[in-house]
Length: 145
Image 1: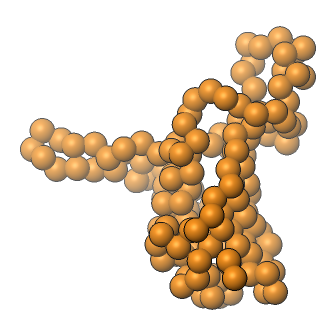
Image 2: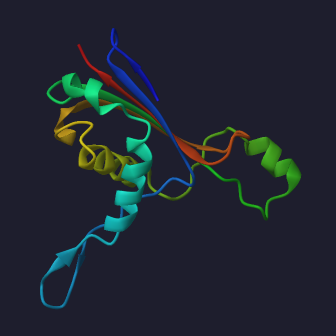
């Protein structure tokens, strides 16, 4: 975690395979539920260990830019040559980039990093294959001035 008072940014890294948002499910009785509720809670705990909440109050009411990079594990079934060729390169297959972004936006909002995702006025995102550091998610959230 890195918080810089002059640029007002938060930088976090979450180890593990990126998670895409699943839509809420509807039961036969019409009730809806979030199938990822517990998973979002666990991800939030991992993020909270990296964010110093005493110093992020200034983020809560400002416009924000989000830069997020998803690193995916290279399939074990691929040849060594193919693995070397794609390491650190773009991943053009599933999961959908917008669902990945939305999951982490929801978690950041749930743990109180910002009040509402409508504050995010700029997003830069990409999906890459693992570059040798393991599957992970790198998030940079900056106040836009």
